[in-house]
Length: 369
Image (cartoon, rainbow, N blue to C red; front, side, top):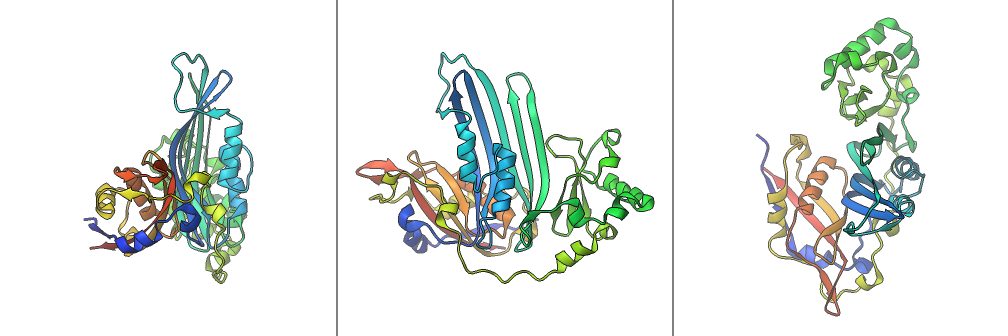
């Protein structure tokens, strides 16, 4: 039975750090943005709707991860950029002005984008793995759909390739080993029609996931058909260099922090010094605990510890720009982010009696029993 969660909220501590953005941004070595939003753009006779569910690494271990930023922005926004914000600005510039609603008399073509980025695993200091998905549709059909399982090497700052991980001779030229490899993929697949698998292409996309490796079976545009295999089972396929990399000593942890502009979204100038800070009506810890979903949380994902999350309370009391400054526990952060998005009861900050957007920093101490 899954453990019950108790959230202890230090109200005095939080009140001390819940400051406006100019004074309230907190220096951090790690940051991951949890973006869940919808947008509507209008350009000439085209309306573009964008749905985003992204777990975007802003930086890890003091690095803004420029190579990873370029890979992700190229995948989602069509142009390599040095940050999520720069890539998103480029995408918006291609689709016109953002609007709140479709006019009743609008007679325009429609285009839809669905963007999903999910962190599969983080091995602190060594690698981080993702599943990225992007689908574009018009009013009648899917125009394009793509996905990518991949692992980013945090030691060498690169996306791992087949040649980085696997012994190419054994993988492709040893008929006996290759047959056994395909048998393993067949036995561990999460569901598929075997006739649709092109075994000669595999492995194509893959991602490291702790003690396992996940292989895309290349029969679904969304990447939801895969095999997850224990590394001990396919140890014979790994190259000597990869095994050395897995055992390689990690670089000494850096002390420098990520620049604030890489972590936080810039707010309008009138939100810098609100006279009244954002306030939550009720017990925020209890509200988060009630909203927290245990679905997908493993027992190992529930150690006691501290989570530090920063977000913007918008003028309408909604939350946006949710950034975790403690990122080692990806599963738990994801659950807390979802719980935060369900919170109702925020009063926005005010200045001159008017509501303004304001950043709020929230440390949580979590205990499980």
